[in-house]
Amino acid sequence: MLPFPFPATDTASPFAAMRSSHPCLRVPDYQAAVDWYVAAFDFRIVKEWPGPNDIRLAYLATPGDNGSLIEIIGDNTTDDGAKMPADFWETLNPTGFHHFAFSVPDIDAALATLNARGVPTYQDPFEVPELGYKVGFVADPWGHIIELVEL
Image (cartoon, one colour):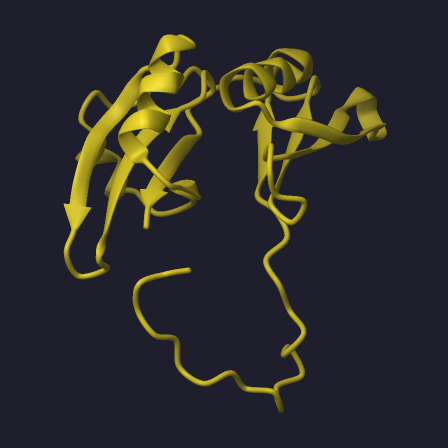
């Protein structure tokens, strides 16, 4: 649970039943991406299926939460060759998707495990006093930034 209060829910809204479902990540190599998320984070493969134009798709779930998914789409996309900025703070400048996040009980332990599995830390952990928690970042091999949040 986040360490700050939420405003009252709006049960009269036509979107009151809306819940977060999943981010979708496009990658040039479907199997490599699925294998990476399984090896790095112990994600579970929930469902795999073929799509149009030779694409492959999968839902992956975190090891201990059946409600937290990511979707992988691959094999019919191209890598545009864009490189990750060396400075994490430069990634905040362009518009568009920036990152997705998962909460962890101990960010230092999570990053140490990821580092031992060959996943480098992209941005060392830092406190966000306005939110009351600590964050750190890694990136997958295709440049998708993943925030880890220690509540």
